[in-house]
Amino acid sequence: MQSNGTAAGARSLTAWPGGTAIARYGIAIAAVIAAFVLRLVMVPFLGDQAPYLFFLPALLLAAGIGGFGPGILATIVSMPLVYALVAHSGAVGWPEILNGAVFALIGLGATWIGERLRRARERAATREAHLQSIIDTVPEATIVISDRGLIQSFSAAAERMFGYTAAEAIGRNVAFLMPSPYREEHDSYIRRYIETGERRIIGGNRMVAARRKDGSTFPIELAVGEVWLGRQRFFTGFVRDLTERQETEARLQALQSELVHVSRLTAMGEMASAIAHEINQPLSAVTNYLNGCRRLLAGEERLGTVRKALDSASEQALRAGQIIRRMRDFVSRGESERRIESLARLVQEAAALALVGAAEKGVRVSFDFDPQVDLVVADKVQVQQVLVNLIRNAIEAMEDSERRELRIGAHLDDGMIAVEVDDTGAGISEDIAQRLFQPFATTKANGMGVGLSISRTIVEAHGGQIEARPHAGGGTTFRFTLPAASRDALAGG
Ligand code: ADP
Image (tube, rainbow, N blue to C red; front, side, top):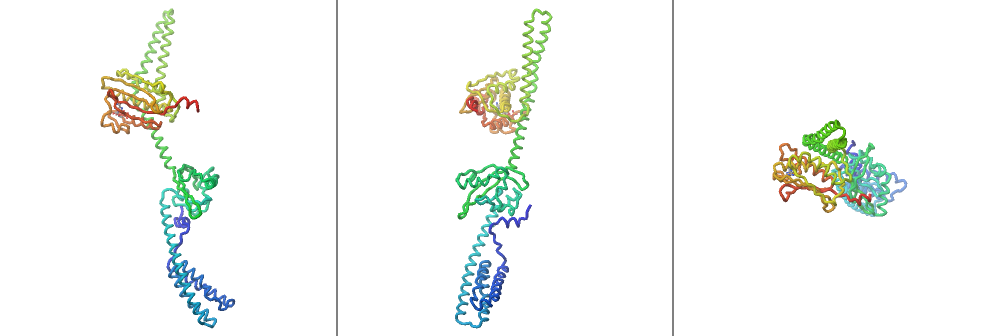
């Protein structure tokens, strides 16, 4: 994508090349020679005035860049050259010798200071390289901006994430990494923070959109920290690309909804024969009533009875239609859709479906609804799926029991609605008690073991909880909660 060398060079703010020893000593000698040549050129104007003065910048340069060794070398090389200049003009007396000695001392002093400067610079460069290597290994993109929004540093991860090299990014306003409308507003965000000190994003995490070099936008999580260096304020942004996470979440969600759907189909498959039987009943009743009508019509004086029989026939046909409709709703895929629903109606419909065939198995069913329980916010089909799972499990658990009593109840509990399904079955088998709600935990020969795990997913997605506990009179109670929706809240909006 880009050459790492230039990128690293551009990223670092004050990195100093350091230089090889040859270059450092070479610079020292070159600086001294340049000073000598310049001073020679000046002889017609200056005569023998201030012969040392031109060498001082050369000494400072040699020591400043090269440190101790080059500083000493420059001082030593300068001495005979200065002497040559002075000797050239004739007189070499005590004043010149004294001047030479002072020059040598100044040279040593400059060398000492230069060496210290060089070490400090090297330490700073090492620290910076270290810091940069840390920044570059942080998986989040790290971007430092000034209080005017200008990018100061742009990490390797930022280069990969945004597609710009550090060289392209540094110095530009960070807003260019954002799509509209953040792009236009970012400067005013910073200004407002600086003026009011009111923190909106600093110190916290936020999901926002960002923009790559190719113009595509992507979701990011942004954390911003503030740092003062001297009197200058900087902001450091840590950027995490959420694209992958969101894609994974979407995939998981799709998978889960598929599983929820498949489990409904399985439940229905298991119930299909019972349902066929159940539908057969109203249909044969319809046939019987209609046959009766035909016979009755032979003696037309009993028209009133005929009308009654026809009414019963259409009632039975409606019943068969309802069973089919509920089945179709229940099995249909549909998006998850939460609405305000009457819990009583939701439970009754689910029970009508799940209890198909229960009477033949000798199961007595009772409903125990607290009249205060009213509305819930729920995806009706999904909550019905939970109820169908629990009721079918309860019926199956009672197959070998003498007492077969199923109670479905609902009451208010701490702002939530608690729904309970009790049975007088064998109770939860010990092998499975710990893994009850885990997928594929089953004790049944033909069981899939997904019903309870799906039920838990559905209940938790609704903000509730599901649990199982032994029932006082033997058997098991499954209890789940859903958030209650009050009529007042409804009226309010
Ligand atoms: P499956 O019914 O396919 O086995 P579930 O997840 O619905 O899958 O149930 C898992 C297991 O939990 C069942 O196999 C059974 O052992 C146990 N179980 C569920 N409900 C009850 C109940 N009401 N009484 C006793 N055991 C139950």
